[in-house]
Image (cartoon, rainbow, N blue to C red; front, side, top):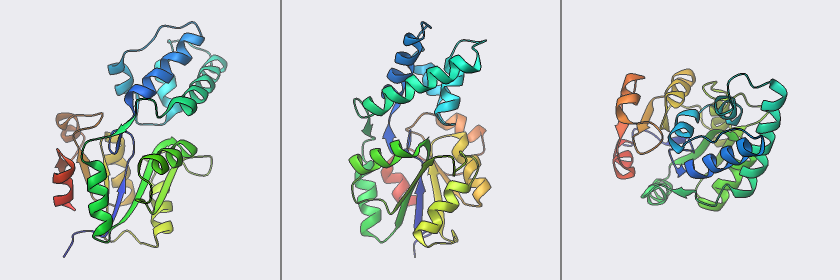
Length: 215
């Protein structure tokens, strides 16, 4: 018997490698404001808590709220136009999702990326593979608040008793805890195994094939 019948996935760093497109949009916005660019590694450390926090971390110290908001708007416009330039699924992810669907699992994506981007990326990269998606919106607080997880479970018609959360960050670990769900942490994303263990990860998957075995 399967351990779970429902799998809720994070998006960035878990299903899709979005880092270069995020970094390009960050640096476009910073450059338009006349501010210095950030390295790919810096952006890797900034992601995970939504684009508002991403840009708050990327702008120079002492930036006014007005200028930060202007920079965030520039980022959003650029990212919306270029979010699929370099983004791609991690190797083996599509095969994993197809295997889960074929075996009757219900699948959802819950992401701190803004909702329109979540729905667009899932539709383009994973057509027909997910039953529910939820992204940041005025009606849905960002993770680690569990509201989006509960929203996805309601859409799926599930109570979470046999659900598992899959993500690549400390935010995902906290989200799973707050939702009362077990968590499987993947090591191919934006945080490494040592970081994840230090933040309480109990189950790690190094490849999508290993993840399939764990669920």
